[in-house]
Image (cartoon, rainbow, N blue to C red; front, side, top):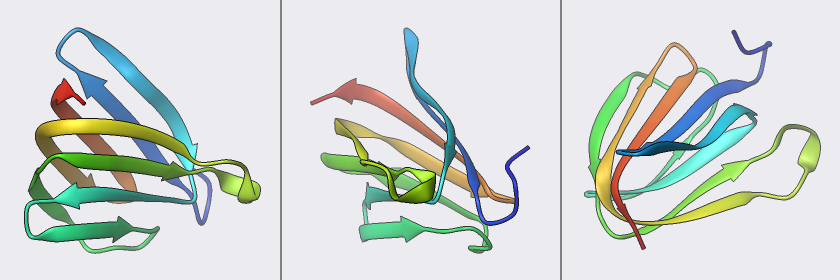
Length: 88
């Protein structure tokens, strides 16, 4: 479980886990527009469009970026799961 002020994040493709760990924030290319997720955000389930998923590291480290074609994001109780159908 993530510590206070952190998200537990997992980014998965059909054949492997692309990234797993804790983060300060995540931004995703949601179908309705870009969406930023921070600790305490309300629960959400959204389809993804082509774009870039960005995971902002805790402690101000460099962000990880993943180009995606489609998929969905699920956010609940400071836990983010990004499922991508195809990487860009």
